[in-house]
Image (tube, rainbow, N blue to C red; front, side, top):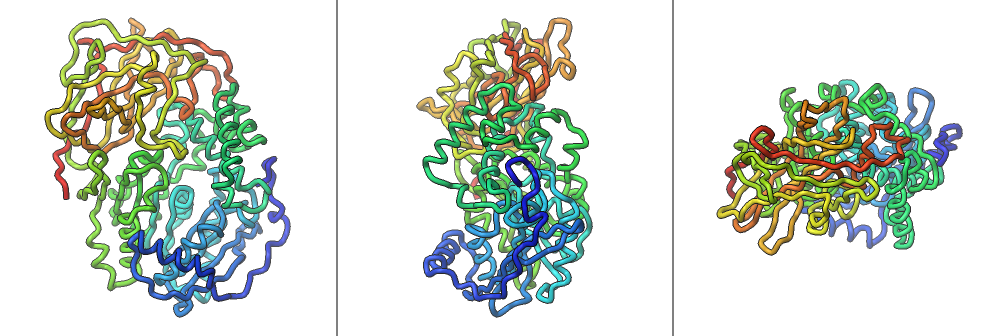
Length: 586
């Protein structure tokens, strides 16, 4: 994609001709790196160290655009099972190492650059994919003399999203899909969770992708890390962009250019035909018979993955679910994830490996707080809901409060409540110490007594909040924390709901009731620790600050201070519901 949003040059020109097949030897360092990484990740033994490659294969799309791909295969097994990877992040750099890891273990890898990226023709349009490119790719694959008649797909994040796109029609040769931290629907949980625009996550991705596509024709994966100076500069521009109003200008501040798809995101606040282009939930019927889904407790796609798991299970497919403890993209660095996915591939293509896949648990979870893996037969595991109620003075107990005065705070959008950690597109995502935020006047905290025994929370987490505000539009942000004996307060999960007056009208007393869906969790609160919830009206810049006026998101600039009251009396049971489970270590 060019900076001005026009199609890259190769949409009109001729892509490079395919190179002849050549022995992919690589450097001694690359070979040692491949072996070392395979050992660290617990991968299966190398079947062949000799890997060949063919670069810049041309795949014709239905509209005349040419898509480019690279093929890697074991030198002594040219008709090995195929692993199809479709990516917008470039075919080279780290992807060469990924392809080699698979090829050394008996698989062909076809690494395709998506439309408008890394030499492929057409225009890249954010999360809107050309739905005809997938069928065209499969039609081309069927014509290749090295195609054995069966393939699987693999990839995380956008690479997993591309697998959902591929499922637009039934494909008999598709045997397995390994989809890690990827959504089937972009609107509801990622872009507008709870109705609040995920400004920080959206801009962080826009800034990253812009740096990759800067020359308009190919991606530049090396810039994903870049120099320290460039990262500092990008960080400063990102901070300025998030703080600026109106947010219609934020993309230009972050990248130096107006990004067309970002403008679409902020001008479509409600789900409509635009977002329907990025909704692949109906494609569940065309996924292959075997699917492995990956997620993370601190990943912004977790609720979407869990919804996909439930639909896949209901459809009768064989589906495995793995939920790691880290933030976005970190499953692939764990031995458990890699071992499970290779076992699944072996079961899909090799009868001798079927027993290995049968050993996979239907659901595998990394329990936080105790840092161990736990197997379960389904999600969510059996649990009982236990309500915890805020009390005046900041207490948190398991019985409703008596009649009492509400808790109050003042939310000023000119000094928006910040956030730390959580489900962010950043290196600082994950579990972090929240004490600095909890000292702010615009954050209410309610804390339970020290636990006398361990308490395991496993399943969906929800909160009911009764709030009265002086502003028309407000946000309710709820976060669950684990308070250590020395006072450190660590976030476990959180959620947000945007209350428009048209969607959440107040009662006769001006009180509004909202249900906040927090991210699911699997966490052990140890004896001596305390359970805490935060209630506030923002988590900036992860979510754009609510200006309080109800004006259109893209152009709003007027700021209104909101005086908030949280009710926790006999008639208004503000509470958080925790799914308490009786789990023991493996």
